[in-house]
Amino acid sequence: GFTFTALDVGQGQCLVYTADGETSMVDCGGVQNESGELAARYLTANGVFSVERLILTHLDADHCNGVRQLLRRVQVDTLYIPELSPSSRLRTQILLAAAEAGTSIRYVTQDLVLPQEGGSLTIFAPTGEKDEENAGLCVLAACEKYDILITGDLTAQAEYRLLSLHTLPQAAVLVAGHHGAATSTSGALLRAVRPEAVFISAGADNRFGHPAAQTLARIRQSGAAVYRTDLSGTITIRG
Image (cartoon, rainbow, N blue to C red; front, side, top):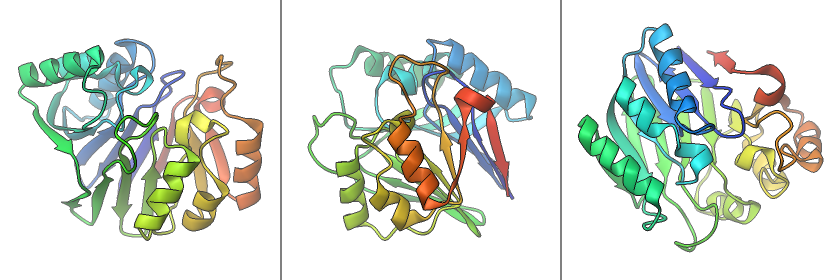
């Protein structure tokens, strides 16, 4: 079985996926350091003291500013990051913290399939231009009958490229791109993966107006159920 959780980190993203005793995290952002502490407490409360892999979709603060605190508190075996934002100070700090914590670092420049008991974890490398805003990694967690797709902050255009390069399976859960922004979670993506549920990780009354009304309308039209951290707090699904 598996559990998949979108932690309520306010305006940011921090996702935890545990399948067959292995824990993967995608992003660890939200409020500076606090989101890392929140994630560490959530893990230890659930008896998880080491994380096999931490995947950062891209280097925006709201997706990774809790990483250093997480690394201080929990053993992380491998950090997977895209070759993006080389001049970012946060990226440099994260790489230093990972080296200090003894975490191995892998740069994802091509698609990776990581086998996992009863399933697999696929990390799709960024498509498009290196300096493109909101480019980044996508993650597909496959566990027997359940597939979960996470697209980070990909724009609709990058979603089209992902769809043209890969045959994506029908997903039980889709994490809405870019906290439910209007420019992500396109109709094309929703039609391709036909999710049963869409998770939206956004802060209550955030200044960006996420999730956008038109995104919510597209999701409703696709027939998927919507779960939002800004309304419900931390969301967990078990399978």
